[in-house]
Length: 279
Image 1 (cartoon, rainbow, N blue to C red):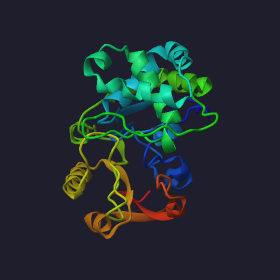
Image 2 (cartoon, rainbow, N blue to C red; image 1 turned 90 degrees about the vertical axis):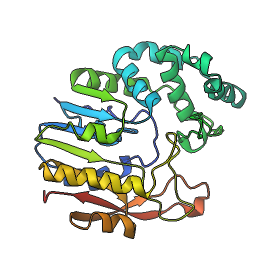
Image 3 (cartoon, rainbow, N blue to C red; image 1 turned 90 degrees about the horizontal axis):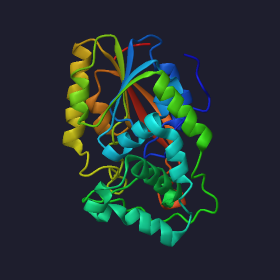
């Protein structure tokens, strides 16, 4: 299947990998039977590689539903996005839809998908962030001309998702990993281990991803390794993470920190890429 350059992320996601693709791509195995990404997020690696067969998952139900709508009904999604306005009062009204659970449940799948994209394009710093109740809580971004309706990219992503053999799921990553077949390649981009007490960000879904979760993920990687399934994992290059994966191949790459509200706190930081294979 020929790669389409218009296929790219349709939402900005914390820890998105677009800027790191030139460093990560050479580390991906040349051959595998099926691609698996249990922490899909914005899907930068998926859309860059455009594999013919893929298993993709995310714990965020609204996000996975958005991809399903792009797959199933992209033209109505584009029409729905045309209704949205880049205005603060309007933004907060749409943001608060999920405060009324009964009303939100009655929205169509297309309306919910358009809301996710609209809020992502117009909220501060392009973050998807929810509180402990699962309610979107990022503030309005006050951007002059956000690209709310990127119809060419939406259509290109829709075409790719329909032409490829993509399996969507919304569950715990461990459930996905235990059923991965032999010959697959797994790319793991979990919530990162914080480099400081103030750097933690796991607000894309309810709950968090603490060190116990990082250990559970490493144990899942150990199981993949025992089953001879190739995996690559990205995380912050903290001593804790490097110690967890000390038995694997570690590569340090430079990434730009982009979500700090203080511009002086944005810059180059070390990330670690973990692999259980040489090339």
